[in-house]
Figure 1 (spheres, rainbow, N blue to C red):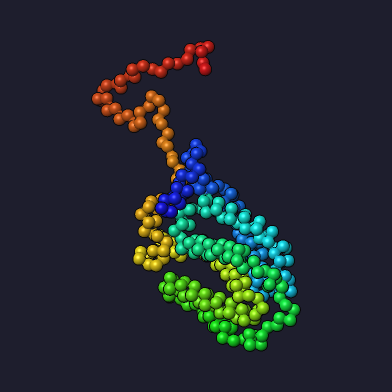
Figure 2 (tube, rainbow, N blue to C red; figure 1 turned 30 degrees about the horizontal axis):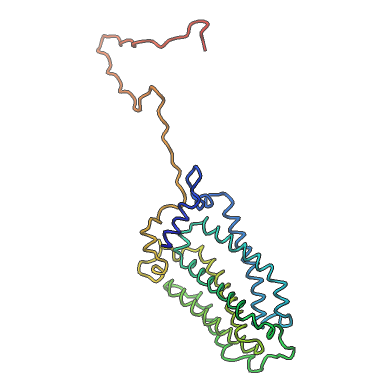
Length: 313
């Protein structure tokens, strides 16, 4: 069902012009518009993620410990909201203008949408549940010190170990691509969980729900950006994915390959054959047989009319 809807967006949405092209095809074939939209989308991601991460780090007690959360929200949230609105708008237009079917059947795009939904759910949970008790944790007590036992411990060593192994996977070669990607994802999750446990132990004065909301927001938006950048690479495009593999199933590549999506997204130019001038045959006339020996060639039926004096032109 979604496959057909996305295909309708690509082929039929906005198909009202004389050239018969949909908005998706028109935007894709534009000279500068798609590049402007994509560039604006990336720029607003920087503004949104940069400002929202300032708040997330404060919620976890990592940075701006002397600044109340309410004060930081008043300074930062207006920029965050404007950047978020522009980011979503340009993201939708970029989705339509590139190739909606390629996006829909791309594992990185699906992961990006998954964590985008997770981030949205976390925002709703924070504003409608966690933030109701903001007066209790708006400021960190002046005498709130980091416990001595929280300065190091198993969580820190787990984070460092998972991070080192994760970096080591980028040196490994001659390994199945799908295996190495999923291994990196697992190690990333382990490292993030260990890092959160370490940070949580250093900020006992902040409620766990507040720190957890900040950690989910920071991680979700980080993964949204990472997976969004991975879309540009053809590692798991359906045309290059082995049938029966996990990526092949998760991307619904069978439906992609059998649904006519293999057609070229860029319209091909149609060249029409120029009609032959009126009065001329499409094929050259067969040459006449030469006259017998001793005979003069036959005169033409009628000589072309010549203009008389005073009638030229």
